[in-house]
Image (tube, rainbow over the protein chains, first blue to last red):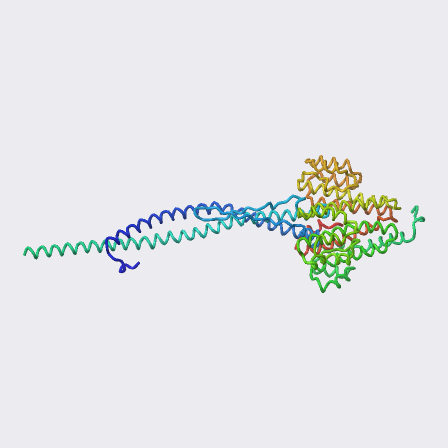
Length: 209
Length: 351
C-alpha cells in the first residue's frame, strides 16, 4: 500500500487501527498454530522414521522370499499358488483433523491370513509359499501404515509451510505497512490540526489588529 | 536274487532301464560345480544335456530363465509320459496312478487361472502335463468359458466327483483350499485302494505310498505348528499312513516341541525318520525341516528300491529323482538369477 494512496482521514485511521489490531491477533494465532503444527510434525516424524525403516526391511524380506520361492517352487509353482488369491485387501479412508489440517486415517480389511484362509491347499504346496505369502502380507500392512503416516506428514508440512508464509507476511509486510500508514495518517492529521490552529491564530490576530 | 526266475522279462527290462536312467541323472558333484557357475554358464550346461531338445523347441517362445524353467518342466512331462508308455502290466497301472497327482496340480491351476481371469495362453505356460491328462486334454479344457464347464468337461475322470461336490462351497467362499486338500486326500485314498486291490506287487507299491503319506503328514504338522493353527487339523490329514486322524489332531495341539517329537516318534517306525526327528528337537526353520524330510524320504525310497530291485520301487524312485533333478536345476538357475548366495541355494537342493 503506497502512502500516497492513503486518505489521511480520521475514519481511515480508525479503520487502520482496527486492521492492525486484527492483524496482530491473527499473527499471534497463526504463530501459535505454526508452533503447534511443528510440535505435531515432530511427534509423527519419530513414528514415520520407524515405519519407513520397517517398511524397507519388510520390502527387502518380501523380495528375498520371492527369490527363494522362485528358487524352490519355480515361477510355475509361485504363479499357480498366486492364482488362488481372490480377496484383495479393502481400504476404508476416513479423515481426522489436526489443528485444522485434514489428514487421512486408513483402515484396511484383514491383510494377514492364516494358512487355511490363503486360498491354496496345504497338501499341494510347500512351506516356502506360506513364508512368501506371510512376508507379502506383512509388507502390505506396513505400506498401509506408512501411507497414513507419510500422507499426514506431507499434509502437515504443507500446512506448516503455508502458515509460516502467512506469519512472515503478517510480521514483515502487512503489520509494518499498516503501522506506517497509521503513523502517516496520524502525522498528517496532527499536521492538519497544527495548520488549522495556526490559521485560527492568524485570523484572530488579524481581527484584533 | 531269489525269485527273479518267476519275474517276466519285460519287468526286468523296464526296471533295468530305470536304473540306467537313474544313473544318468546329474550327480551331486555336478550340482556343487554348478553352484560356482554364473547363470549363462548354467544355462549353457543345461542346454548341452538331455534338456537340449526342449530348449531348442521352446527358444522361439520363451527367453532367459523362463525358457529354462519351461524346458525343464516339459522335459519332465515328456519323460513321465514316456515311462508310462514303456512300463508293462501292473507296473504301468501303479505308475499311472502315482503320476495322477500332476492332474490335480494342472486342473487346479486351470481353475484358479480362470477364476482370476487369466488368459488361456498364460495358464498353459505353467501347466506340466505329466499325469493322465495329457497336453491335448488340458488344451481342450483351457478355452472353456467357465469353471463349471471345465468341471463338466472332466466328467468321467476320477477327480470329477470331488470337484462337483466341493466346487459350490469353494465358489461361495472364494477359496479352493478345501477342494485342493480333498483332491489330494482322494488321490492318496485311491492309489492305496489300487495297491490293496490284490494286484501282484501291490504291497510294495503301498509301502512306497505309505512312506509318502507319512512324510507329507509330518511336513503338514510342522507347517501347522509354524502357523500356530489350532483348529481341527483333521481336514489336512491324509489317511493311510502311520498317523491316524486323531493322532494328527492331537499332535497338532501339543505346544511343547520336545513333547511333540516324543509323541510323533512313538508313532513312526522308519529308522531314518526317527533319527531325523530326534535332530528336530532343537528349533529349526520350517524350510530346513521340509528339505531334510524330503532328503530322508528319497533316501528311504532308494533303500526300498535296492531291497526290491524288480518291482515298482525302481520306477517310482526314478520318477522322484527325476523330479528333484528338475527341481535342483531350476533352483540353481532361479537362485543365480535372483542373486542368492551359493550357500543359500545349496540349502534348498535335494541331493
